[in-house]
Image 1 (cartoon, one colour):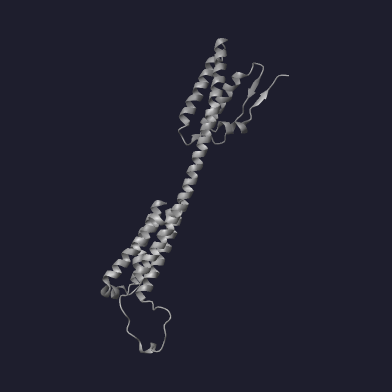
Image 2 (cartoon, rainbow, N blue to C red):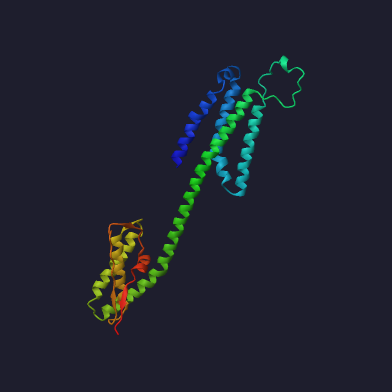
Length: 265
């Protein structure tokens, strides 16, 4: 989006504004009022740059910053009013105007041109600036939501991981004390789970097959806390194992898997 707005800025400053100026009798004005025309042109570019860099971002800030932005807008209008008020020439009296009382000041063509170009610069700069600021606001909102979700996941992991680890280590300790044949395979599953959690935490996506393997290992390790009279059955059917999903989704997936526990009568 930044590159797009920059391209629009360059197109306006190098193409649109010069074309609009070219539609005016600029050659005659430059010949007679060179300094004034150059000053007016520089002022229009200054107005565009100030609006894009300062005025519009300030209007999206705090109340104090908004007041500063409004002050810049008012200041640009005042400077343009001063420029347009400069008398470059005194028109010759027209014999047809004799006897007519003018109650409104006569506006010169160069004054009309200056105000028309000023309004066009204001409108175009505000349109592009509002588009850029709207995109920035949406980007910041998405980034804030992502940070919030990440913080919630980290908080959840920090709360559940010690509880899960201590219970699992206690169950493994009991298996090794009783010299159970399931002790070593269970330890290997636990190590594989911890390795997966460590490697997948820094990745945005993992394959659905890897996450399913993690769930199976999780259920198998949790089953160590059950007695020999309890049987745990887990069935997972995957149509697309290569599908990429965010990691650490086992808690959400387990809610849909619902392992069936058979208890003897």
